[in-house]
Image (cartoon, rainbow, N blue to C red; front, side):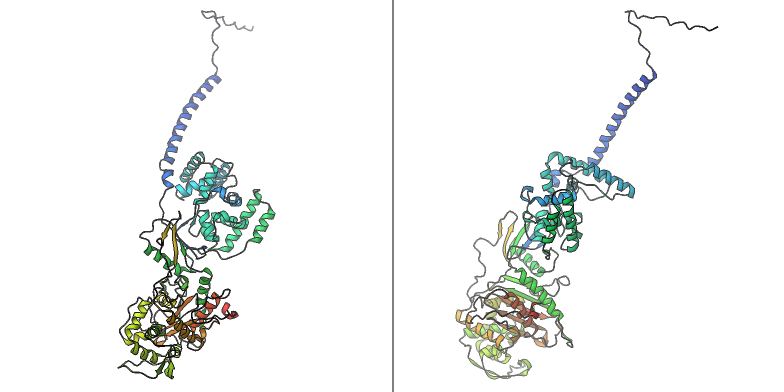
Length: 640
């Protein structure tokens, strides 16, 4: 028999309500889960705050970091205002995004951060990709950084590859995005990022590589600059032009993919790109002897250099480039069978007012930074005779005054002519053209050796001059730049010349720091009268047409003087036209003799080749006392 379960008795609450229902196990579980979730959340938040504090406690003060001190840079411009070179890190002018051509910003965002305008400082897809690669490789290999993150890293953090530094980067990126607009962030990036060749910022890079402001870059140039950001030092055009161009092509492709430009425009940019040598960096050797000299002069002119400076120089880039190649090439043309050959040479070219247009201090700057045009003191030989003949003209001698060329002896001193040849009765003009030693000694005896020394000092020779009679034959050491400056007085209307290489020094705000207001250059005191200048020009012109300097003939009105020292240790030629004065020295640093190399050979040949190039596409000013002749065509051999 089956027992029936009794129904539960009805229980009522005192107020008549039914009793509460019993809570089931699901309700208890839910309550437990909520309770512990809240507790866990509190702990997680606490640990999160602790972790955040640990990551953020040593973050830099952003305001202070933007004002980090740096060494001032010196930017040198050629005489025409184009970029020449820079010493130190170069920072360009701050650029506003609205002033840049649109393709500049497009190129950078296309290759570096295509979603820049859409994210909030962090690209989650990029981070996920980077984490996957890093975990797979077992070490940090990718960063997935946005432009904002790159600013945080480059301006405020180290380049350490670690997860802690990466989290700090994210925190700073969020802070930057919160406080600044996208335009301001991109401007900061473009103005501060490194572009290689010691150039920081888009304007500095454009000036360094293209000699122009970033506001004027073409599409191809913009692509090339944007391409450098991946590896600035390796891809810099000054380091690897082919790699830089290949990267620029890749950037153009990404711009097409991003929809910034059409493929046809990208193709035209590649076709229209004109290959040209990149502008020199601070480490380039072309014109570097001149740059070193100019920087030294700037330090003398200014008490301190505590800011970025822009130095406009006197250098002619075309003449400088030609001079660099010419000196190196001619030193390598050693004739077969000749044992002794000069291993070094120096060249200085200046306008008659002393503005240096080209300077070569040696065969190879990378091998030797010793500037033989400025620092070397060598015996000038017969180029020093100019001062004796000038003193004689002042004393009343004339171009056609007759003198005797014959052996002469003064105690133990027996100066002889080259090759022992004597001409007997000669005029002053012929004696100078043929560089006759015996005539020069006789002339100095009559004029006075002190007058020769005084004339040399008057024209700018600062080196001590010996009291020995041989001083008139160039036995006292002098510098090439001083001798060239002395000769420059002749085409400078008889005014003393002080060679200079700086036109103006300005700071980044445009304030002129040098020269002082009202200071004029090229108008030194009058040291030679007009009749003496004209007579000397005619006499020195005969050196080229009929004397020892025939290899210096260039087909236009020119004058000059050869010089060779005892044992062929030094060979010189210093000559000038109406608007250009050039001095050339060849020899060896150790004063080792060169086989038969006289001033009328290699130095005169270098001088002639350089001057022909200088007048290839221009006419010359008249030279006082000498008619102007037409400019001849340049032989092909001298154009190479």
